[in-house]
Image (tube, rainbow, N blue to C red):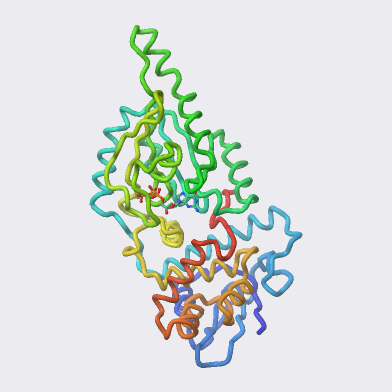
Length: 371
Ligand SMILES: Nc1nc2c(ncn2[C@@H]2O[C@H](COP(=O)(O)OP(=O)(O)OP(=O)(O)O)[C@@H](O)[C@H]2O)c(=O)[nH]1
């Protein structure tokens, strides 16, 4: 099956809506429009994309990564993908999730902030931007802060290096960690104590006794906050499970004689204005499942994966033994449903999401540092 890919800008939301719905008939293509034509009943169609820029990783024509890509080209391909993602998500029902316990947490966290000597903000290393709370800066003000990119095992070394360089350039302290195995936790504990050391210097100068340094652990749901604390403590002190919204109450726990950690429920904005971020949260399981349509999210994930150099169309085809007819994620999910799940689209969609989350397509970040 021939797949021809080129310019990836989708300037018209109407056409983009059609793109997600995978029209049976081929819409007219303008010089800057991408469209997919595919149907379950008709022979495998060929995507015709006219004009625009060919993503560099498709330049060898078969969807395989091109090992000689230069950095700036990859960066600009990511920009194109982000732009497409913006239009794909525009066609969908907005994803919003703000259960009662998050509203309560937000209020309590603001009160507890006064007690914190240092704040440890945990983000998901696969989506460091989308797991950055838009109000965090204003809440924290000048408070000492450590940024942690957890789930470091779920991204490639190249992704890790790219983010490390990006944050280093910004002068932001960043620790990479693995909440499942404990990598990075000791460093985190040490860093928190060093950063907040002046607290006890000041206390002693006033004739007061030293006290444990207090570090508040904050971040989006399911990014690994409780797991990191449990790993540091080497005990299961905080509830941790593979779904968002497990921690429901704020809880201070003691680590040795000189550090106290606050585990907190995941927080997320009341209104997620950036819907591309919301879809990435859904893909990475960092937002409640009831807030999104699993089939829509899986369809978008397929479209993303076909565009990621280390995955591409071939990886999807060989994993599920079905053809990727162009880039239409929705049709792919439908085909998988027929092929493996008796037509059950929800199960098929869930399988794709779950395979991604388990690293079956390799460990890949869904975000690259801004240029
Ligand atoms: N692969 C991998 N999994 C991790 C890592 N850290 C945590 N997990 C897993 O992610 C899931 C969620 O971890 P939690 O510690 O419950 O996340 P949380 O941020 O406390 O979640 P909330 O309760 O929603 O706030 C668990 O199944 C962990 O085992 C990591 O670094 N790598």
